[in-house]
Length: 503
Image (cartoon, rainbow, N blue to C red; front, side, top):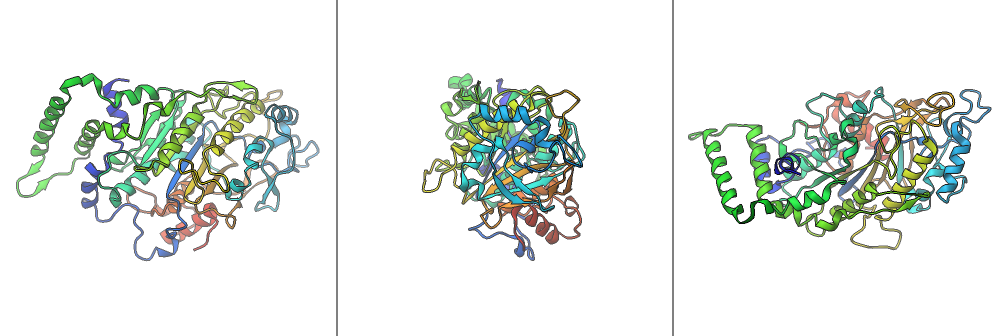
């Protein structure tokens, strides 16, 4: 990785102490602060999540075998859609389940809005084995109208359509809120990180690290886990050798000269977002050691497990291991980490869960691998490992851009096509307790969602779960929540859907 590439990727990533004071004084209000009158939708300290781990299931997770299995839907004699949903590939699904060491048994989870019993499917057997995790899980049916990955992925990650200037990843909102709050003024490492792999960049997975109209300092640190070793080595800045001090002094002098040109005598400096971002980039580069302090070289060590009879380098596991380290760091813990799950094995559509062929084998392997890796970093009942996540203060989000069709992609095919008309995301832990567990919405026999939430509401809900007010400049609008006319009503609607709470 070139030094210029490092600056592009990391320059605007953190620098809370260096940029935060200007960010707070240049605006009327702290981003994320709840205004007067919004107290009913502000979760108390003991309920809100202190940190968020988002896992983006790239490609579109097939919910029929994983998070939304209705045993009576799609059977060969179904009156509406015979041999669909799980039963479109019943034999292949059974074989894939067996290859993962699981059995097909009843795993009833909750009742949906249509009165159907939703089970966790056989590919989610590992998840089901952790009753403590399932007890704090809320499944939310979502629906939208975008079928291409290039449009659906950024919408899922930002809550905005492609091309909207305000489209920012959840990590940017979180980092901006932390910077503006000034919780740790001496901190230089980021509050938000995004781990992705190089193979899916064309489908806009990097939108998770977009900053929208936030200042550049809010941009999360984006790291590609398949080239992370080179990144951590760059943090040492060895290319400068003994010239580092002189180099930094020279760049600082140039920066001071430019700042002077932007400053009116007696009236202060004019606003310049690009100049601010350049200053942050230089400050982060000069303090790269602070980032290296929380990103040790061995953090991204390769892991090559065998899952469901298949062996490969496990980039999702590497990302989750790094996320655990950062979210539980003793002195500079992250507040948000997004891990892109591109799968242990690459699906034919480009990776992860984009199963245009081989839906059963690839989905079973990749979701089993994810479940195993995720559960390994969550404290079990009676366990109090400070290096693992606690569901009492951590919200885990399983997100995806859309689902897979309830029928085969074509006659004789063993794959499924893109299906934004009805799919499922999950919120686990944090504000979700046993009282909030369950299902919001419903998907009918035809595979179409009859009641559902939107990707925008998903993002708004995550911010509310963290105690961050989402309806602010650079954030979201009331119009991002259907059927409401005020910010308070919008927050209430979203909390009811995703957090299972009334206000």
